[in-house]
Image 1 (cartoon, rainbow, N blue to C red):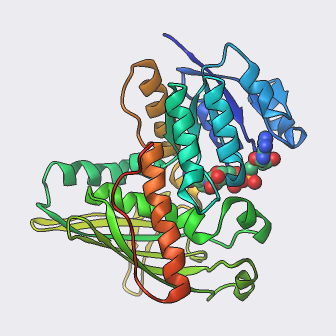
Image 2 (cartoon, rainbow, N blue to C red; image 1 turned 60 degrees about the horizontal axis):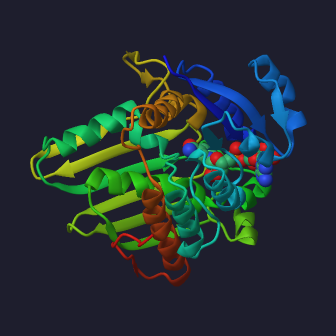
Length: 341
Ligand SMILES: NC(=O)c1ccc[n+]([C@@H]2O[C@H](COP(=O)([O-])OP(=O)(O)OC[C@H]3O[C@@H](n4cnc5c(N)ncnc54)[C@H](O)[C@@H]3O)[C@@H](O)[C@H]2O)c1
């Protein structure tokens, strides 16, 4: 069996989770890891059997035996690191989005570098391959509910993030709802033409100091005439609330929350079921592994990627328009045509 030799850049909150997951995949070998604060991760990475550690990501790119890099750094560094990786001839897996820059040109620079250097790049839209959501997707594509008319997504985090982290990875729309914009488009099989977003700070009023919100209600319209409804919150006291439904001319497909136990209790005074899993780490563990496998097989067997640079640009475009909608209180048009690279 051929193993893909890879390097990882970024070993923070998400990076360390991904590295642990990568270590469970037979077809990949994590050769080295770089992080600005590599000393903070050294002990954990050594325990995982990874000893080649650097502070400077260029050391990973300079390693000739490495074919692919996984970029898990804070969002404000993705553009620079992904371009450097493409120039070094490495295939790329990058967390979303590609840039904090609201201008699409910044993300397009990455896509052009990927094209010019003939490497492949997959984006971390893990929810596409979540077992429940992917089953909905496949059924919709197979025509099980006829013509899809409405996608409904509830996506609520268990708790607030530190403001310092939000500044590095983006606020609710750019970090969190970005996944929902992609999921809505993926399920509907059509591009988004308009977004109307309303939101506020119902949980942490100090978020206004960093121009962020903690609660969102969003309406999307698609090119095929369909709609999507998305609701987000930064704090659901009962866990990580992740539900998706697609309604169509011939029926409905619906995925409820995933809990640690499927056992439900019914008594004469109450009924009980387990709360949803507590955070993205547990809820999407399988999907995080599956998206990496997808990427590795795409490289080893020349197969399609799960989510591309175009997909992340289409989602980021909606996030930018949604921000404008929040600020103006008006629906905002979104260009549904694909960007030219
Ligand atoms: N797909 C998902 O479900 C999901 C969930 C959460 C976060 N994310 C994404 O993951 C990314 C990382 O988020 P996080 O919460 O782990 O952030 P974090 O701040 O905890 O970790 C980022 C790490 O990158 C390192 N870093 C920054 N600049 C670097 C550089 N130039 N060279 C080397 N290392 C550098 C930092 O030292 C830090 O350890 C973000 O883009 C975020 O949007 C994805």
